[in-house]
Length: 239
Picture 1: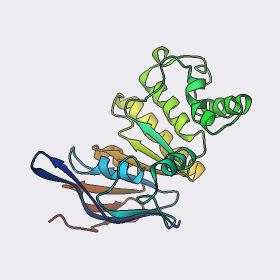
Picture 2 (picture 1 turned 90 degrees about the vertical axis):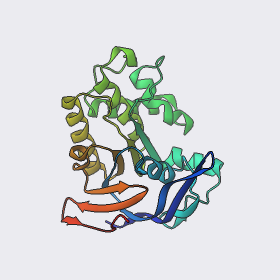
Picture 3 (picture 1 turned 30 degrees about the vertical axis):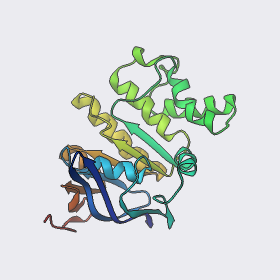
Picture 4 (picture 1 turned 135 degrees about the vertical axis):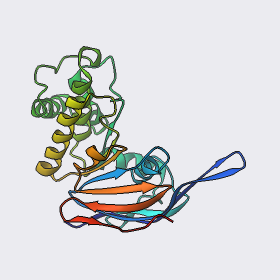
């Protein structure tokens, strides 16, 4: 594997009244192509802020995110929006499906914005929904599906445009333990089969251990990196 994302000196500060909140404190990190990376931490640790800045959903106060040498932190918003649509996929805890659309229509939606014709986008969407075991749910709307089925639709939508990177923010937070296990195995399988880079945020150590590496965060800093393929090593100590 080769480096896909390089994070250098990433800092994010917020002003809350008269107080300055440091959400990220000089974070350095390299993410490999085809890696399943889990960012682990409690609420307020900085994990979601890091994810959002990598995805171009928030701007850093200082530092840089490089994707194969291209600075995402310096990219103009209009260009960044097109970049996200073309290269990135997103899986959210709340699914974010459109209630009035069927599973097939929800999955096909990103392809509409890419100008893919109706026949081609429905064909591609159908194929990926079948791969995820939803062949009998193509015409169902979100309210006609279980939480696990809705999250599978969300995963299909994230993967339908063949993204280079998928960002997952607590993707099993609304699911029971059995469905959570199914979804995590599914995500792991997709990473292994397609070579997509998956970056997942979670507060649950058990879920984080599905990743190739686990990045632990506290108070805006990386405190430990566990490589599940090679054992554990500390990259930074919390101050």
